[in-house]
Length: 179
Figure 1 (cartoon, helix red, strand yellow):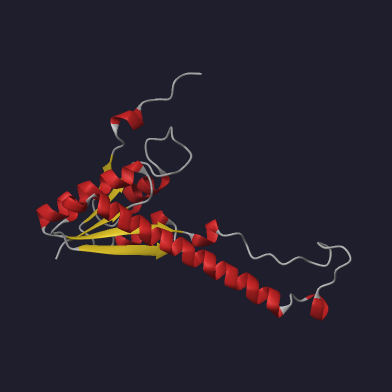
Figure 2 (tube, rainbow, N blue to C red):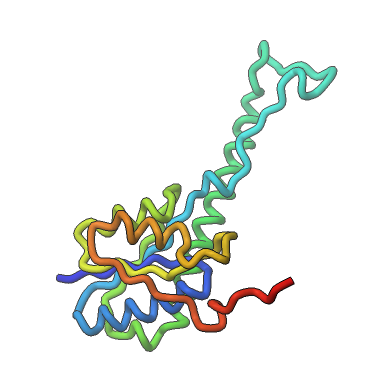
């Protein structure tokens, strides 16, 4: 059976890409794999344990080692954060699929949340064996003057199947007013 992979995030282009991919999946009688990838390690603060020098007058217990209770608490907080980010990613997929409800009706949809992977790398990997990879032209990156975002650019260059890049809406393509 045919498989179409579509990469989504919280950008306006993701909804257009999802709609287009769902229409194409219906036409081809293909499975639609909706993918949201994120790198939780980049979102979380690094594990930090102060050194003797970091807190004057306070030495770490056990000869410079972090107390086990503090280590366990920091690891637990990090796990809670990662769980929250995963729930947010799953909610994002659910919300996007609800927004295009009629379009995906009757289409075999597979939801995929890919954790701790660069979105471009995850989509390129998932393109292996796919019949089509669909992405929006721009995500949420900070370089709005670029025609392609980093993920769509990587997909075009490295995907192992044909790629469709859904352009931004006309109002999003207008250049910013001169200052």
